[in-house]
Image (cartoon, rainbow, N blue to C red; front, side):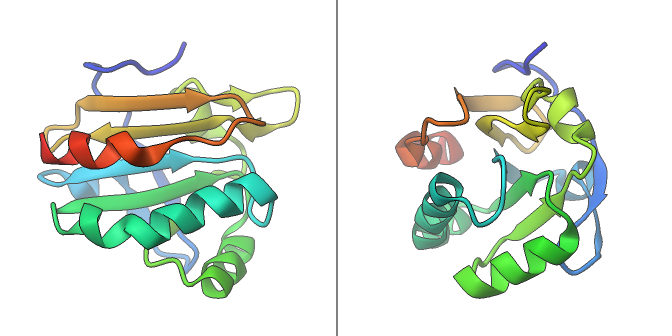
Length: 148
């Protein structure tokens, strides 16, 4: 079952690329943009995250926190983040638990499908894009969701 607009976003706990514990509940009172993607260093994923990097300041100006999530380890995330100079955290979902809770885990390839959700200050999903693995997302609607 996929998460839908109006749903309470499931809380989760994991680690980021720096091995710091991250929980969605830590961001209560802020808008959060969760960006699920299949793999670090893959063409479409890299392009999407670089696009977010290039637009991140506008999102941050509106008090939004961006968190990338894939099944890759914190070690892989650390190298990917450094190489691409991402100003946002990459979260390790090595067993797909978070992706399963959000309804985007693809069992066939053991990775998350492409989904971006914006969660408001109260933890409610207010925006969603869900694409298949081969289909890049258009994030142009994220800023509007953050500012609404």
